[in-house]
Length: 144
Length: 153
Image (cartoon, rainbow over all chains, first blue to last red; front, top):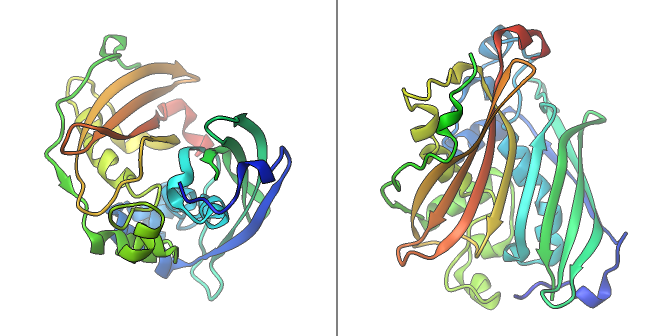
């Protein structure tokens, strides 16, 4: 593993650099194409409202993809992620305006798991419009 | 209508191989705005010890979710997919998916629960490479909302 963060250099409570990821309608269309998820709730406002949503919402998997970047940017090597799970608790609503929405992600080392394997548990906090959009957002990360 | 508990443990046959393309990885990385060079630059991936460019951690979902259609569209199970939302998602990696992988997915129904009028279905997707090695396991929780819980959205 070529993670640039050493296990010995972190402790429980160590904070990862927080990041904010913008999301607008164009990005959702791109993600739909790249992921193959063409559910119209992610691009068609009329359809989204018809099924009771406030507006078009981001793919949960898009939010999940953004959130882990706080970890992969921290370690440098995406393969440092050995486990990653989230709960989709609230949709990220993406209005059709110049700003769109943003996803704010912070993370901290919640536990050092295994001195031998050099793994830590990172807990992520993922917010949009001030509200938690992912719950139980955790990764097991192997450090150098 | 509650789903039949006897489906717990049911496994579905492995899917036809999905070949992971370098440009598909690039397209995905660009779509999520992730500039990590390990996704697009082979030399950068090699510097990290990978034989070729690797895929972002959640890339594999497109493959496992397609495979899970065997479950969600199983007429015997009778899931009303129009009421399904994605509840939880978890990946456990043996290694990162990389360009050139030919991946098959074997889906298994791990649990069926009924809670507050909703059906909750846990599907596990084991992703193997061409040599039969386990690459990643995807755990997907799907929630089929019952008619009475519609207002919760």
